[in-house]
Amino acid sequence: MQALKSLAVLGLLFATQVSAHGLWTEERRGNIEVIYGHGAEDNAFKAQKISGAWAYDAAGKMIPVTVERLPDHARLKPLKSPAVLAVALDNGMWSQTADKKWVNQGRSKVPGAIESTQTFKYSLAIDQPGATLPKLDQIKLLILPEVDPLTVGPGKLLPVRVLLDGKPAAGIKLIGDYRNAPGTLSTETDKDGRAQVLVRNEGLNVIAAQVEIPLKDNADVATRGLFSSLTFLGEPHHE
Image (cartoon, rainbow, N blue to C red):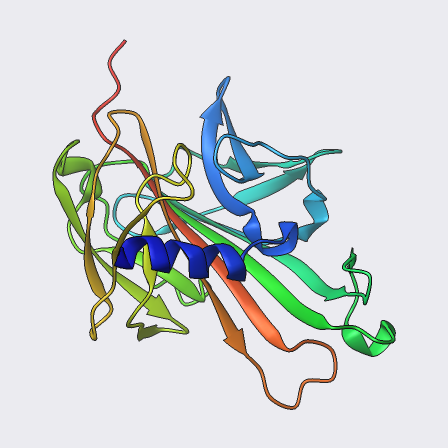
């Protein structure tokens, strides 16, 4: 019953398309594609909204990475195969008009706006076992694995810690399989920001979290919305 209540609250917070979409990366046809969607949806988006991308080798050393900005999405092109890959998207300021329509502007430019937010979306991918994670201060909502997620295996629990603006975040609800079951909550972080999430898939796992943070004295937006994902394969890929 409590889980259903939590799910209802989550649904109210993220009922709009502005906040409902997540961000993650997938390898498709040899390319690393940035996916913007909700569950199985893979939606077009403005590639210029990608605000940063970072790649690292297994030792945590940065690898140069470029963002290929295609007409309907973005593709990441690291100089060599990364062990760790992160990406950020700034979805901009959105305001809801009195007739319930959302426009991509701050409320100072939308007379009579009844809601307003600026949303940021982040993704962290662990692609090679034994990778050393670098500092990831650029990811403002971070799902940090506390063991190598590639060694856990499907059906086992992965311990994680959620950081909000670099600090442990309590009470953050985690979706264990955002790609296949985006409406199903798995667990919630404790007072130290820690939780254990069931690894559900042999293939790609996308664990997700999202929060809305009220802002004070901001002329354009009332809240800051954050989405973050952690992605990894449940089992090694075999030809």
